Length: 189
Image 1 (spheres, rainbow, N blue to C red):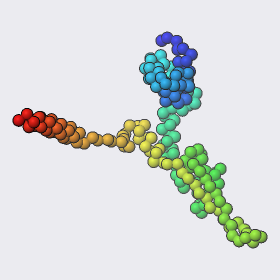
Image 2 (image 1 turned 45 degrees about the vertical axis):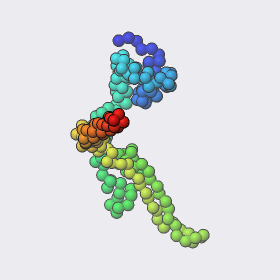
Image 3 (image 1 turned 90 degrees about the vertical axis):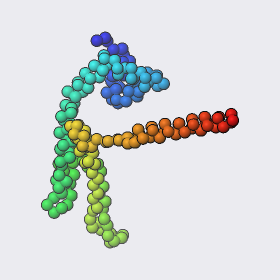
Image 4 (image 1 turned 30 degrees about the horizontal axis):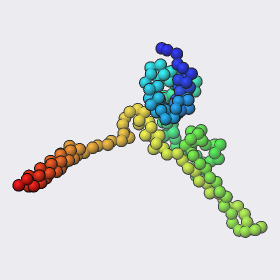
């Protein structure tokens, strides 16, 4: 393996930040006009592909985040019980009492508004309205399905009737040609 140039090394680092090749190439100092082509060529080089793979492995080791961690996390999020957020009376628990899985991503927003009754000196708080927004759990199931390749959520695109369309276009072309030939014969008579 040959040694990477400084700019190629920057490309590898930038590619790890954002794996959109053209953007990584631009940030690494390649011309914006030719960035897409440069990125494509760079990614085909065995030395650069190996450097990217090595850097990803080192990052996974350092962060301890890999495919197993991700799948375990997604499974825990998909199976998290909404009931864990409420007490025995059906009231929402204080956030600090929620299980970590809910605090770390399954709840995307909490809005608490006080309700008041009366006006002026007669005004008093009578309760609270609590709105909790949850992350889309179906998306986690899709990601799990894609990871384990069960293809349960695979998008299927079928092209029906392409041969029939080709035949129709061919017949239309023949009719057009026949008309032109027929028109020329009629003029010659």
